[in-house]
Amino acid sequence: MNTVRFPYGRSFIEHTFDEGCELCVLRGKINEYVPDADESALVEAALARPVGSERLSVLAKGKKKITVIASDHTRPVPSRILMPALLREIRLGSPDAEITILIATGCHRETTLSELEAKFGSDIVRNERIIVHDCDDAEHLRCIGKLPSGGACVLNSVALDADLLVSEGFIEPHFFAGYSGGRKSVLPGVASRETVLANHCSEFIAHPNARTGCLEGNPIHEDMLWAAKEARLAFILNVVLNEDKKIIFAAAGDVSSAHGAGVEFLSSLCRVSTVPADVVVTTNGGYPLDQNVYQSVKGMTAGEAAVKKGGVIIMCSESGDGIGGEHFYRQLADEADVSRTMTEFLKRQRGETVPDQWQTQIMLRVLMHATVIYISSVDDETVRQMHMIPAHSIGEALDIAKKLLGQEKLSVNAIPDGVSVIVK
Image (cartoon, rainbow, N blue to C red; front, top):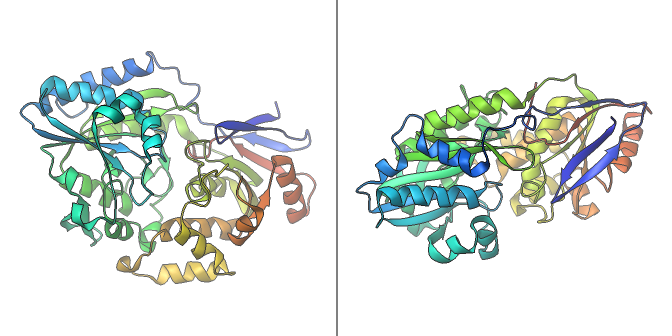
């Protein structure tokens, strides 16, 4: 009963908590849900019965230039299933269309050839036209107006020049956009760095509605939805995944309606309630989401919601790809006082956002609420420079927590997948 498995990289960390520990394991019901069909059948059924839209094959008729936005290497989207289904449906309506797969990297690094092959399979990589978005490549970016936030909306011209714009994606709780998926494939997916910075400004990140599971009144979401509609994103295929990264639900169709159907399904399974504990042990859901420290801030926010003020968050994230951003690292490591950095960020206007500021701002918020102990493959000194305490096992981390809190018996909230739950 007291043994819990936590996803870590491509494997797990297993820990048996002491009998005297007041343990509460926080899991959504997502793994309890059993779909009525296999993964491919769920996707095909969604494409056959789109929400708020005609079938993709109908939309594709007469279209010559079609772009499909696909997620990058940092997302566990099962593109080996989604992309072939999308391509078949498009070619059913327009057999001779020129199709481009546009990789939505946002401001992430370029997706490598080996990562593309792992994501799509060698056949698609070899036979389809694939372009990896570069947020700094001004030659292939174009402004289409101003976002509701006032920032310029600059997007990849491969998306804008398409006769038909389509996207794939997956829906999960998101720590400031409310939920991932849908409109996010456009902004930040194929937007310029300038546009992402405007959308991710400190004012919006600090907004009380820019939180996990919240779309209504969320200024970040409103910007993203506006960009997707102005870019004429006509059709999406989004899925919901369980903790094993298997498809349990699929929705296709209109960017708002289909995304809304996925959000409604997911929210019924992922909301959990708890009493804040002395310690929270959480994760970023394993690979590919725990590739670096930068992405792992998402899982930390689940810990933030479930831990007492002044408590301890134990974050288990392999981080085999390192920190994930030099700006992110320097913003944390170059100032000993986290409150000073936060004050500096909050003074910045919407047009003054700097790269990675949003991620650092959220991590600073977490650090100002609780101590973070970080279990990873990152070297100890780097972890310390980022205002966290390194540990190499959950047992070691709990011993550190006991000393920090000055108590032998702890209340512990265990969150095996910190990016798949909404903690209330």
